[in-house]
Length: 242
Image (tube, rainbow, N blue to C red; front, side):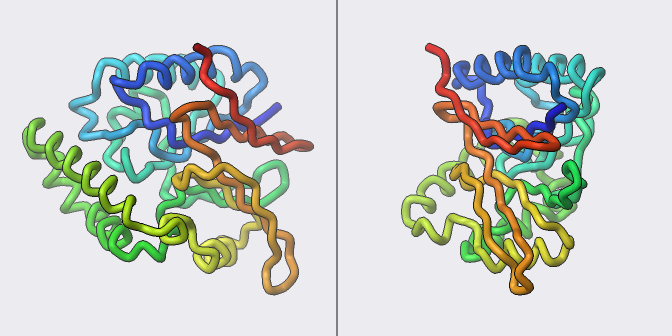
């Protein structure tokens, strides 16, 4: 049996190729899977459960059927942090807090989207603290559809412009933040996404303990799946079928 971890699919109505690849993954790759963890940014943008697009509703129905035979866990990303309990209920997904600890086949592991670790990006961290306020979420949820869509588009455009001016190091996770979270959660392993830089990083704590940070990749041009069993760990990617 295996446990799978994915993230940063950025599904949207105008990227049918990603949706097709994800549907193929759900149809063909879950036979011996005991749990599926989605580590945020499943959707390119989410403006509210009440305004879910048709493709997202279809996906919820597919998830719901899958959830009858294996649990689907979800951690919010920076693009779909407004995904709520209503959609999760329809999809049969289990919403997790932004950092969540599990025993992964005997290894204490902390799971998260990863944006909270990019602590050198001060401007983004300020925005992140604001967007997580319950009052800010409540106000946004009660705005008209067009207003919510405009805000979401403006934020995406601003983020794209800003990222072009930021250094690679600022947009990556900060090592001190990584070790601090591992120490705080008393875990030996971390799995996250967000940076779109799939890799398995091994390092040691100050006490000499062996630590590991695994990053799942995005699905812009290929799949990216972390598969873990009691004996193996494999981070793989495959190009989309033409």
